[in-house]
Length: 344
Image 1: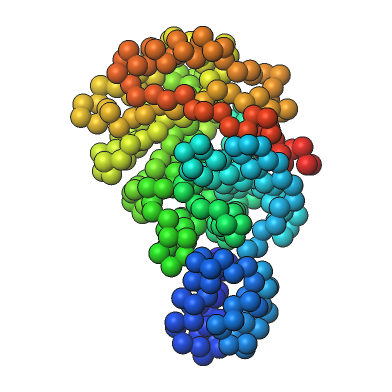
Image 2 (image 1 turned 30 degrees about the vertical axis):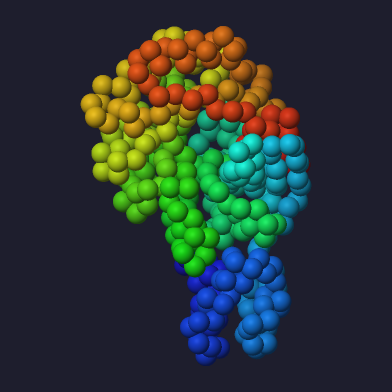
């Protein structure tokens, strides 16, 4: 049986105690507009309701507490402890223009085994619940930070966790986090059925597809998921996404020195994504300089600057929109799973 999330349980408690429906808004306003961290401090509520909330949910609104934290000028990286002793990571990235972006986790570990990923070396521990996903953001909110944008690019494959869709409902609920869909990005290695569901249920959420090689055999070696959902099937789904939503699709590409950073790779990427008529401008490639990790550093290293620049020139010469992602947090081991690994 599915575990009811905190906000459903609050609604249940209000009904069980015979309180009027407006109590729900009083509680959610206290959490999301006033930043009240404990039910006992919600003075607008009758004591009996506060006591019932504390008995059912505990006194603290946010269920996560940091087990470890590393901070640099532009990044704040947290390792949250879960009730069962597991831990997950979340990062707040601060941009010079005053914009805060959050990278959150959807699973503890990951079961897909991408060879260049620190999280992939952990294996899958379990899916996070909707509360565990959204509480990563609630924690930052309770610290007074503004949630400008959110990316599901932390630990785990977001579209492999069925609780993702419940979490998205919570994040976009006007009475809760009230985030617009366009301020949320979901990254996937290519889980086609869940990509289809995302398109149908949350068509304005930004979609990022992790490519990392345009050649099927090499992609299968780097990312075994390619054997289950071949690249051509994923590209067909991306085309449907672009056609039906009119939204841009981002293609993430980690550059690995001597592995996938050649001119041939760049030409092949352009061949896969261009030539799509009026919709070809909706494909945007994000090139990501590799962030070496303890678990994968012996096999892979970051591409040379000259190789990255040459890669960009090839893509742009073919008319592609391309960005080289700014590196944040390399000084605090910002590769996903690294803080988890060091604390273990």
